[in-house]
Structures are given as structure tokens and as C-alpha cells.
Length: 161
Image (cartoon, rainbow, N blue to C red; front, top):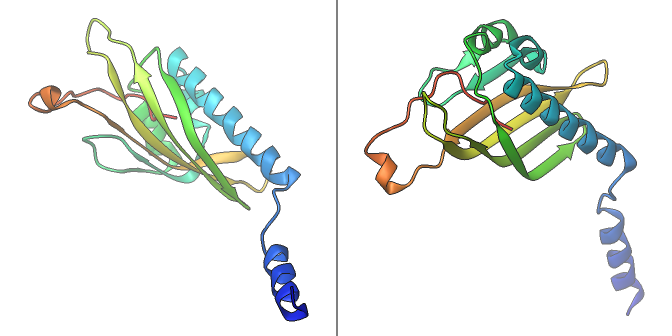
């Protein structure tokens, strides 16, 4: 390899960011926030659920207008949550003070509602105190063609994770 080619290779490798301990710590904190989210949802604890959102967060439930701000999100969740929420995280990405998750969720059938499953995206931002808060939360059902004729309306449901 010629000296200029070696220099280009070294420069290229030096530009690739190495995973840092900080990123793995942030990933763990984000995963813990999702665990708290699922627990609060399953326990019907709207206050604990609401506390996971940033002051300027936006909640985008299916078949509903966007809900802006922690206070309005709290009012939404105080109407109730669904029990039995299970999530599977497919991807977590972290870059500095922002991170996002992509995943799928499942809810069992109840006496009032059929089973539901779908996908979600959650965006989080590290706060000044070091905690991670949700800034955007959206989910939607993955219905089969047979279900497409009869849309399922769920009340305040999981703002999944």
C-alpha cells in the first residue's frame, strides 16, 4: 500500500465513531424507561406514565388528534390504560442527547376489546438532570385484511413501547 493510500485509510478509520460507554449507559437508561412505561401502563398508573414524558412531548395515538404537552398527555392517560401490554424492542438508536426506539407490541383480548398488536416509535431526549424523557410517542395496529373492514377503536391504549 502506498503512503497516500495508507494515510487515507487511517483517516477513514479515525472518522468512524467508536461505541462509547456513554452510549451503552444511555441505551440501558432508555430500556429502563420503557420498562417503567410498560409497568405503569399495565398497573393503570397514569401519574407514573405521565412522568415519563418531557414537558413539551407529543403523543400521537391512533385515530386521535395529536396531544401536546405533559399536562394534556396526563389527562389522556387518566382516562385509562390497557392491561397486559407486552413490547418487543427491535431497534434502539442513541446520538448524544436524543434516542429513539422502534418496536412491536401486543395486548391481550379483554371483555370489552379484542386483542391488539402493532408497532411503535418512541423518541426520547436526555434532560438536564440526566434522565431520559419521551418527546414523541406513536403507535398503530397491524391489522390483517379481514380486520380492515371493521376498524378497532381502542380507548386510551398503550402509548407503546
